[in-house]
Image (cartoon, rainbow over all chains, first blue to last red; front, side, top):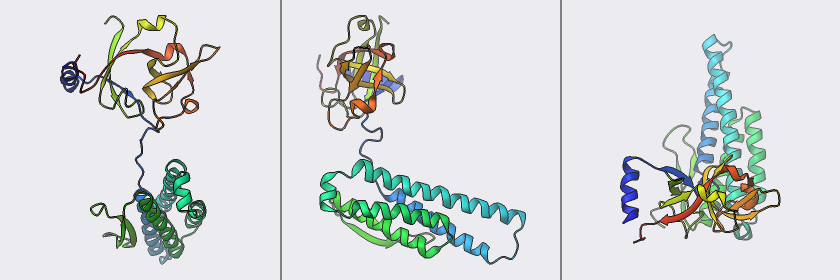
Length: 168
Length: 101
């Protein structure tokens, strides 16, 4: 009764909210943000490679160059942060027991991201994507969700691991 | 009005006692009384905003340390101590969907 009354009032004039949140976004973990960030890095490398062929830059091209490098940096940092969050907050002893390569893999992703940030190197960035995909596959395994790989339907058209949520 | 205020709760860290989506009535005037362990408080937390938590301990300096009611909550250490004046009120009633009172 009172609940319904309060709910009606709340719909019209919302009450102030008191949060009982866990780690603020509670239990929302998904490696897709990291995967897409790596795709962005690869795409930036591709666009930078196009600029490499030019002998000199116009002012506009210089601006484009700066933006591309900047986005590559930003998304590199995002990869690291997203992976670190899943590794640090979600992965616990039971997942580690089952997948004892997780620490090494996470560390490798950190190093590979740094390398991809430091260089304009497509092969190295694709290698980073492989590692992040492996991480994503393990993540979905711990959730009991099966996965499939598919080419992302937009540039840079690279292979990504997706969760098969319909199946589970 | 009368130092009473209604809040809507989001999140599950106080479940099952205070589930997500329910309403709570808090009383500010009850803060005149001593704070005891186990009381549920609405706190204006410097880092996490307005939160509802249970009093874990009141230390000898008068700081209030709080915690959630289940393992998914932030820990006492993460929440840290708050001053008494940062507490907006003590929870005196919880209105959930199934409350008939």
